[in-house]
Image (cartoon, rainbow over all chains, first blue to last red; front, side):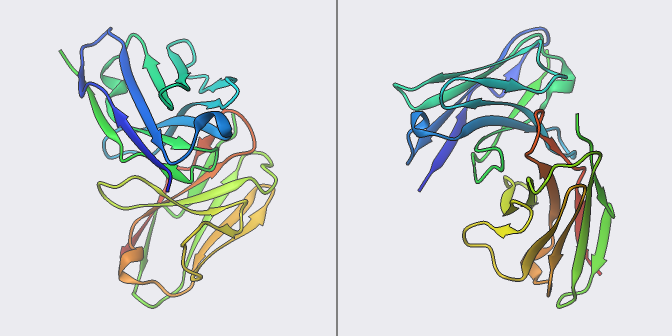
Amino acid sequence: QVQLQESGPGLVKPSETLSLTCAVSGYSISSGFYWGWIRQPPGKGLEWIGSMYHSGSTYYNPSLKSRVTISVDTSKNQFSLNLSSVTAADTAVYYCGRSRAVDFWGQGTLVTVSS
Amino acid sequence: EIVMTQSPATLSVSPGERATLSCRASQSVSGNLAWYQQKPGQAPRLLIYGASTRATGIPARFSGSGSGTEFTLTISSLQSEDFAVYYCQQCNNWPLTFGGGTKVEIK
């Protein structure tokens, strides 16, 4: 069974960089599929952040593109999200997931941007 | 960017009744449309992909239809566990985009 688990700080200061990691078990990232990040502000809907193909190609939401980097560490079977220059508007539950139609999701991690 | 519009925003349905949720795309997404169910405090769960294919383990009471710009999710007989928020998502073009959601509540 494929499982994904997000990890990272739950509190980030404004203007700093939000960094999260998604550890994948039950499937090798390098074997295929897109791997991506989605977020959900409290009480609001889902927003796609970006995706990475197993070969390394990346696709980002244009509204976040200047601040987002998604990278992969195949040796650890995990991928990461960096979001720079955060503001309170970036406060959200962040999910990692597999595939464009996301068939496996992490449980989500709440990241709060506050001083 | 393809804009996904869901209607209605809230749907009040009695248990055992049929629920019909709509999703419209601002341009054609062919059949590359997914539906998700989300309950409070949980990650979304994939219900339908490819507009009409049920994901693994999804009950047959959930069905999807449509292509191009108009899509429908039908829940044939609502069970207590089906009261939740439902999102559509187009997977045809980058950036991937979600609809705003339909909350299915108990009437």
